[in-house]
Amino acid sequence: MLWAGLFVVVIGGVLLYLARKAADRVLQMKATETSTVSALRSLIDEVRKELGGGPSEWRDAVELKGHVGCERPIQAEMSGQPAVVVRGSVVREVEELREEEDSDGNVTSRWVSRTETVNNTSLETPFWLDDGTGKIDVRPGGASFTLQKVVDRFEPAAQVQRGASITFGSFSFQAPALSHRSSYRVKGYRFTEEILPVGAKIYALGEVSDTNDGTALHKPQDKSKAFLLSTKSEEEMVGAAESQAKWMKIGGIAAIGLGVVLIIFGALELVTG
Image (cartoon, rainbow, N blue to C red; front, side, top):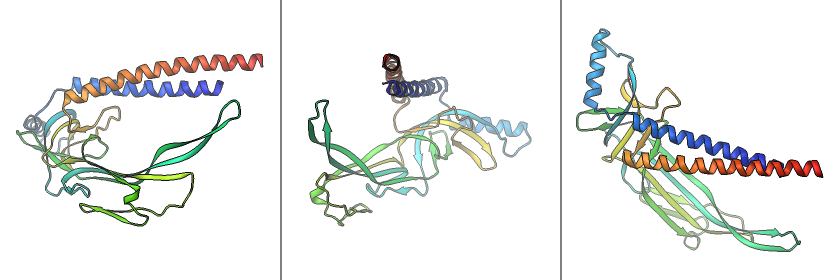
């Protein structure tokens, strides 16, 4: 019980840490005023003039809202849509027969559902954000994305024979051969794909810099600062982060309280045992 209590306290601490991170995101989103690309360009031009021309090495945290554009977008395999970020997965949904023994020694068997990820796709490419006043390059590496789900398809196991190939769009998947076990059965395969499509309206929070590599929005050098690219609005993002911070804080405090109780009982058991 003592070790269980310590484990629960650690979980509580992790939840409080994550709650703090979510609260920091809310603060950053609320504190950062929405900029326009033209205003940023003007500011960078002024800084360059003061320094005698050339890249200014200026950088700052910014918030932008606009539409996605790209000359050479990625063709999402499952949906076939042009996109700048693609996240795809194939998950096998299975059931396993497990035996459980109660305190009286009685053994019962039940089927337990779980999932196994058998394929992952993660693709992204540089693009630009156009807010109507101008365009700015976006380098999406390291961003936290909120994407559009464009494929959510389940194929029952009966329709996916061993070794058979499933094809839709340009995507092709061959179900792997499985060993036959009486305690294991496959329910089916779930195919999902999320994208940041060309033309989508996005909310962006990150850092803009003017360097030898050009002027672009990217992941901040300060690791405590967020880099968000979202198809949701700022209001939706703030609401989701506030809710996340609230419930994680409640869960963290509750877990620490329970853990302390378990530690006390565990310590008493050691003393009296």
